[in-house]
Image (tube, rainbow, N blue to C red):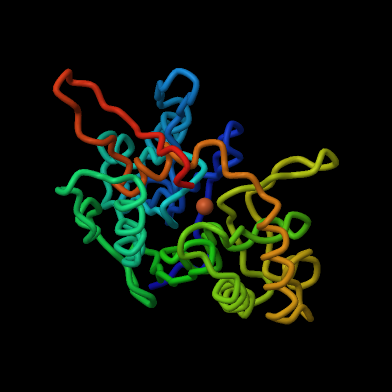
Length: 289
Ligand SMILES: [Fe+2]
């Protein structure tokens, strides 16, 4: 039943260094879209669909039926294009069940409207650790991989894993753990779980932030990470990782788009309700973050 070599096409959003992946069983078959990006210009407050339209054009050119639109987590660095993608090509929108905790935290921090639901009901489906689901002929498994945020998921599809914000390329390391509910101990355990997969397993990344000496890459293998990851290769203990991660996180600035991103992404990519003039507004909490 499980095709061991799913097809994967990756799309880079250079503005946020984010990868969107399309995983599918075969041309003319079934697909899932992982982490679609909405263009957002913070200076003007304008959105656009340039990146999502590239993904949609590929889906249509390959004659794919979209079963799922998957979010690895509530991203803090880009707005999700999931509602737009769903409207264009369909699919059930899913995220990890711990999104409820993320929604509760940010409902308070952004002082959202009382009606804002913190039960994840803005999404079509919430995954628990170990849940399996079909992408056509492929069988996928959802893994809860907390650490960067409490709700991070990885999606294991045959020999391909969509790792979200856990690992980056070996020369870049690992995701930060200093957002609300982040935990470097948990991230270490999540990463080691992923790295226990067979060495040739393909790891598809949510981001790459390459040095000038190489081009951006969407994928590497478990073997690459175990040998060379600067933060969490084989031999680095949990205590060493946590000390490194916490020291490094203390030096990092907030992501450029964290405030708009979180407000939209905890609503499953929808803008806040329109106000009485018909426009949507995002908040800028002062001295909160
Ligand atoms: Fe993230």
